Length: 117
Image 1 (cartoon, rainbow, N blue to C red):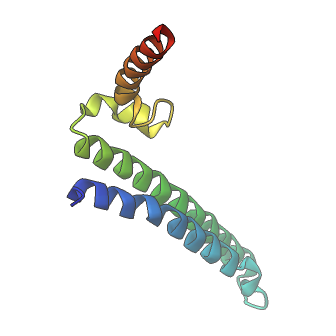
Image 2 (cartoon, rainbow, N blue to C red):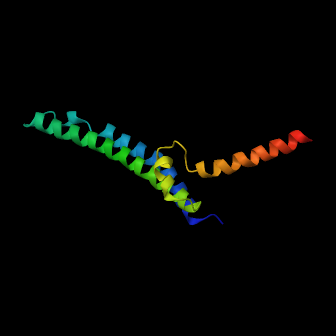
Image 3 (cartoon, rainbow, N blue to C red):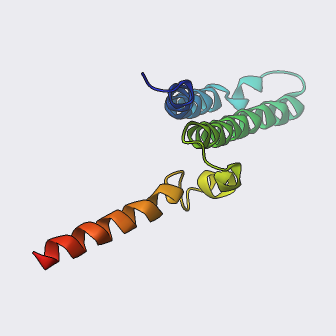
């Protein structure tokens, strides 16, 4: 049975495209030209344009928040230090960085034993 943190991390990870697609869809649906024909056209146009950009910014912020949440949950599931969170969130070392060191040692051992034979 997978750990609860892994399941939540997968949910966060799969929610990222949904958040971005919904945000972009709302961005496209808000048309500042809807204010055409109103008395305060310029003011309404500016408000609609600001709302449009705010929706897109909120979608990007939500995607970033979901990514950081996913990294946090993976680190918790693997019982790693949360000091890895900034690096994992930046995707430079990812959450698998602490494990990659042990993998290299194992590979070096396997390679050295296979070359001796």
